[in-house]
Length: 72
Image 1 (cartoon, rainbow, N blue to C red):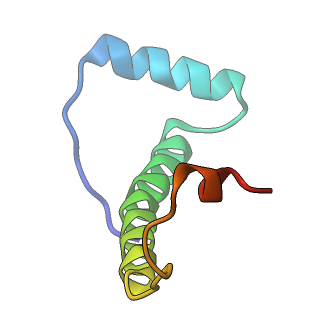
Image 2 (image 1 turned 180 degrees about the vertical axis):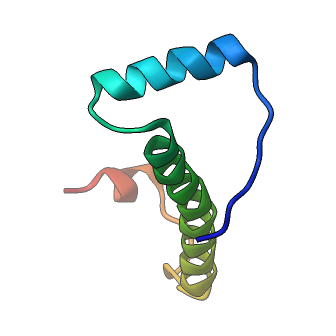
């Protein structure tokens, strides 16, 4: 695992550590979880865009009238 250093307000760090302790975890663990979630967000966005591109070739057969769209 690689170490990194961040700068943040000391009071904010202390407050976050206390919150993590109440949750019976560590600030370091919460940060790793956040980082993993943040990295996945981009992957999910790319997956959605890729899926939409794959669906782009689907042909619905032309435009529909309002009545045709509301048929059940």
